[in-house]
Image 1 (spheres, rainbow, N blue to C red):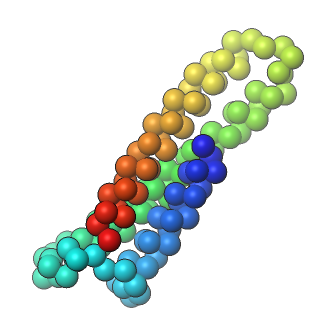
Image 2: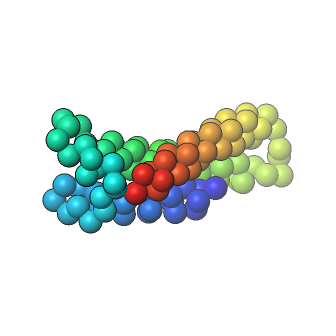
Length: 109
């Protein structure tokens, strides 16, 4: 799950970089239609790419508590299960949100 979050972050970072106004490597068809509006489509897409990159960092930060559970593997107790009850659902929710946002970004290209 952590490597999947990093892969999504890499894709979002690349798309976000290419959509910056100074580069304009990727323009969606909606951007051309709304070029005169105050908030053009690529700005929203760029913000979504930045959000994905931030969420990926949070998912990767969940690795530390997971690794600390390994140390006491022979002495399984509630400290490990309490961490796992937080880590697993939180990572799944974040990666699901990242995938939905990335699907929207790709669909708008």
